[in-house]
Image (cartoon, rainbow, N blue to C red; front, side, top):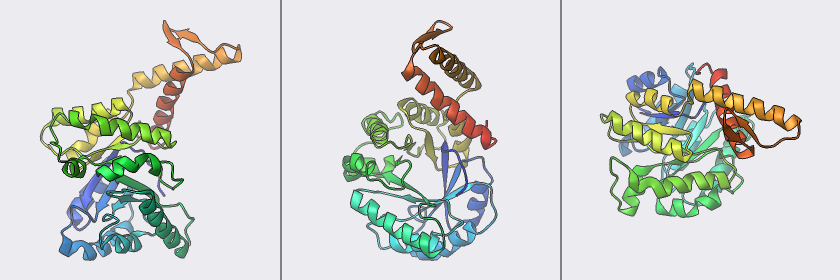
Length: 294
């Protein structure tokens, strides 16, 4: 599996070669070849072969495949068709229970064994998109699976609950907060935020990145190439923020050696919680540096 950051996940229909080629050329952290919503029902089965051919081609970016939901007739065939050494991850939409998660885990693990891969090689990124999924997320994050992070999908979530999905997205605050809290409870990475459908409203998209970033999300699902650069910028710490965090971490390390656990750095009070937060910023910057993206 390729090393990658998790700031941007760009969807592209699996059966549109031109769009796929364009997506693979962009600075997105992950490209998602879609077998679900972006592919017509009549084309879903045939698109599996196209996706598999795409996976076999040389590329520099991590590629996930969004399969169809567990309760559809396509999910099993999708997973069987795409699991291979060339695949970096599977995106599983509308996950709703630990039982469904364990079932998908079992299938992927057996396919990995069949192909001589180490079990756990393929990343699994579930999306919470329904009331049932939201109600069960605390159980799912503690299920002991291969899942490193969850994603949130507002389109199906607001449809399922009969909510208006406004441009300002204030109605998403409770579920976004729950996603971050549950992820932390389960010891997982911060979650990935929903797509934003108002493609031409750039100011609103910036807000749709900044709000979840401030809440504790680490990245954004994107549906248009124009969204990649601003989302990358929103979820990348500034050079000043990294320098400040490195200064805090270094100063605290020296203080600890002297037996001190609370200090001031340029008039700013620093103790363990502050240092831990600064360390996360430093760690992210180091990941991006290693990938040549900072």
